[in-house]
Structures are given as structure tokens and as C-alpha cells.
Image 1: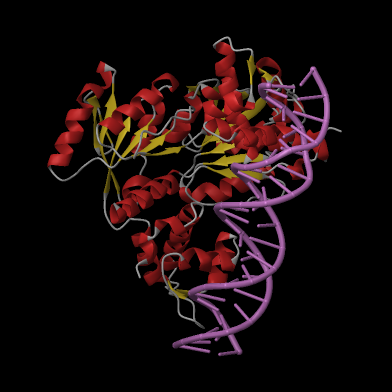
Image 2: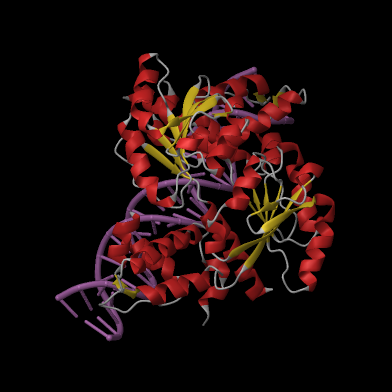
Length: 221
Length: 221
DNA sequence: CCCTGTGAACTGTTTCACAGCA
DNA sequence: TGCTGTGAAACAGTTCACAGGG
């Protein structure tokens, strides 16, 4: 029974934790550690050991009773579960400060994400080369996506770093162009077009979370 | 009874939702809307109306039965609950691509966050002026924080955008310098020093979340 | 009557505790 | 024996459903 297919059973909160385990396991491997128990890994990532065992059990049985998990094997399994055993093509819409920072971010390529293009509507930015992607005119978006599909390198994910007012329109447009996942950085919760997965990265909310806790801590202590 | 003080009763997930309500309420006010029911607001933010009423009830009774909520009043109340009725001083550590993008980000000042300085260890970057903050030598960090405290403008939050390997060390150092909240952008879950609130913004995890869902959707449909 | 505020029911997640296997 | 994998218990968060006040 291939557990990785019955997606409905995997809690959403499990997925980001798998990413965390993966990172820590790679670190352990780099340090020469070959085997790890759920307890040892739990200590490293500051979680409950049962949590880790349960998270992994949604996808299969990767450990050996009485022994633990083989680090290399577990890295491979989690990599596969997360869909990181292939390359995902990403584009960035909006070559402002944030878009530019994202384009230069090294972490992407290290995880199997390949930046194939950056789009902007400002003529003076077009043609510049950021990291592995070139800045193109947003007018070419649909054409570019189609071309990529034609060569078997369809655009999988769009990172949207456009101004607030353009966020929804941009998401609708990339969805229309066939992109099925979006990471939106604009502080505006956009409505996901059907069949498109939208994930929000909201700096303002994060700051407000901090201010709330700083504020209420003042009131208490 | 001031509910905003018994913090233990407020679920963590409520706080980012308040930030969302606040944004939508401001938008409604800008559109000239003066009164809103929990149902109408729920439709706007795509949540359950009871959820909104319960979230607000943790902090007090802001509505009028049979009528709804007065938009202006609710904005004020949420602003107060989130601790946004004052200015918070923030610093950025690491003036790389991401740190620079953060420094230029307009959203901060609009929400009552004031950038007071950017720190870096690269001599050639020091002195440059980013947004409202000037780039200073990281060696001056402790001195700067103390000086700010002396003039009653203590540094409240540090945004950490340094390379992976320096993240933990940097967080420990800002904590030592008296900063009580950190927003960490390095893809390394850092250990929070006692009494310091650390919040993680992890682009890599977000991308992996998308790749997981794209991947498992392929297997199904 | 309408809509808020809230106990109670429900759903989802975490943790416990132990059976089962190396 | 030691550690995994997993039902069952505990806990947290969401939604329901209705009492209560304008």
C-alpha cells in the first residue's frame, strides 16, 4: 500500500516538519552520523519523539525497531515524500527589492528549485540578469509559460512579489498561464483560483505577532 | 476584567487572524463602510463567522447585539490588542540582498514599526543609508542598543537576515544586547534564548510545502 | 427580529503508553 | 533489551446552536 498517495490522511502541519527533519538529517549526515533514533532527532529539533514517529508513519515504515533510523535512507525517503526528487521550475513576478533578493537567494537551487525567469513591467529592468533567470517583460508571461511547457519544462511555481494592489490580478494571470502553485509575498490574502495552490508569506502579520507578545508581556511581568 | 491581560487564554493562531481582520477593516473603512457584522467580515476574509466572534471575544465585547461591529471602534480595539498603538523600534542584522529588501520595505512604517539601524560586518557596506536606517558596523551593536535604551527608544525587534551559519550566534548576540523579539529569515531553526521571542520565516519550507502538494496531486488526479 | 457572545459538540493534532519486532 | 509503529487518551482549535440584549 503506497501511503504517499492517500494524501488526505497527512495533516498539513506535518509537511513543514518533514522539511525541518530533512534539514537536520542532512546536517547530521554532514557530521558523519549514520543512525539516529526518534528521540535523538527530537532533541535536535526540540519536538516530541512520538511526533516524529507519527509524522514519518504517514508515509511508510522507515525505521528499524530496537535500532532507529538510518540517516541516509531517511533523507532519501523524506526527499521523495516532499517531491524533492525532481527539479521544480520557478518564476518570480516583480523585480523590485524583494523580487531581486529572492532571485539571488541561493537556497532555492540547493533544494531542487530552478529559477527560469523573472518578470516585471518596468521597461528599464528588462534584460537584466538575476541569478539564473533573466528579467522579461510581463507581457511575455503567457508566451513564455507555453514555450516552457512545449519543451517539457513547464513553470511549476510562481513567487509573487508585486505591489499590494496588483497581487490578485497577478495570481489570476499566472494561474491562467498554467502555473499551479503560488507563493504570495504581498500583504493581501489573495483568493486562490480553482486548482491553484496559494501560500502566503506575510511579514506584516509576523511583526504584529511579535508586537502582540511584547505588548502583552509588558502588561504581565 | 481586562481580558487582554490573561494571555494564556488566547490561542496563538488567533493573533495572525487579528492582523488579517485589521487589514480588511481598514480597507472597509477606506471604502466608507461604517458598520460590519461578523458574517459580512467572514465573507470578506473567507472564514467562519463564529471564528471571528470567538477571536474577538478573547479580548472583550466590541460588538452590539442585533447590529454588528462599528468599523472604526473595532479597528481601534484590535490595534490596541495587537500592541500597535505605539511605535516599535526595529533593527536589521545583515545587509545582504534580503536585508536590503527588508530595509526598503514600506509596510513596516505603515504599521508602527520604525527601522532605526541596519548592521553588517562588511566594511564596504557601512555608512550606506537604507530607508530610514543607516548601515552600522556589527561591532557597534551592543553600544547602539544601550544608547537607544538610554534615550528611551530601546530596540524592540531584530530582523535577522544573516547567512545560515551565523544565525544562532547572531540571535544570541541580539538577545544579550537586550532585544526581546527576533524575526529570523535564515533557514535554520534557532534556539530562542530565555525570555526572547523568536519567530521563523522560512522560504525553503514554504517551497517544500508547495512541492509536496504538487507532487502528491500528480499521483492522484 | 437580528446579530453578538459563548457553552457544548466536534474535528484535528499531539502526546502517552505499550505491543511487536530486531 | 531498545526503539519503532500505532491505537487510545488528552489537548487544542473550530464550528454549531442558541440564549440574551438592543
